[in-house]
Image 1 (cartoon, rainbow, N blue to C red):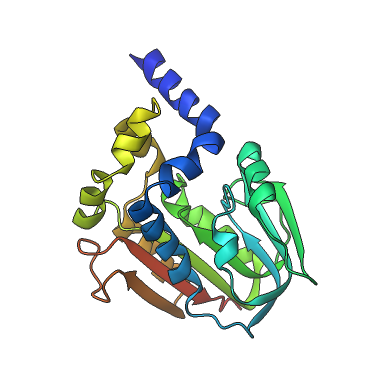
Image 2: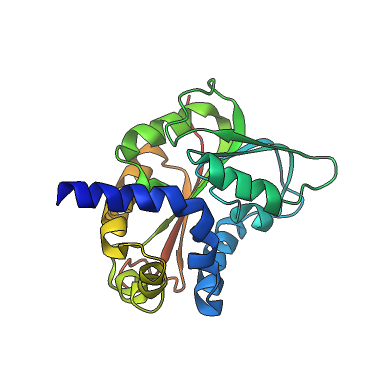
Length: 233
């Protein structure tokens, strides 16, 4: 049984880059919901805002990049899956006057120096990291004082999120030969309410938004946005 479970996980990781966009953005309804989460992340920012150096953690196939509205000098997409970044290279359209680069890196980002970036973006990432408190401390370290940290997470295990799983994603992944429930149990290792408590601890100066309703409840929403200014000394 353990060998079968390991094979199921290895199979998913091998095909992740090939199936992610199809599994999450083929259905019109599911694509609209997923893109709404990216729009939510960028909604508080304006076109004339400027962040000279931006890093996106867990950029995957590059879906979030198209929703960034503000100006920047350089934008670094990172992910632990090199093949996912190859997909991103084909999708990303680089604005004139900006630099976009790609780098294989996990969510701990220990390789970057203190105060390296003006903005950090992590959408659909923190729920996957086994020690999220350490990742948050690292993200705080590499962002400059006064810089912005934008984190978007699903409201798993809230009732709305768990219900919506049954409307499409499970069928799609099953059709692709992926053991969906097993994969999600391995992927979503952190509950939404616990992550919110950790983020609030590390970043007191923050903006919080829920979607699709403004009611602060993980049971009637699908996504939670946490946007903070790095107020470290």
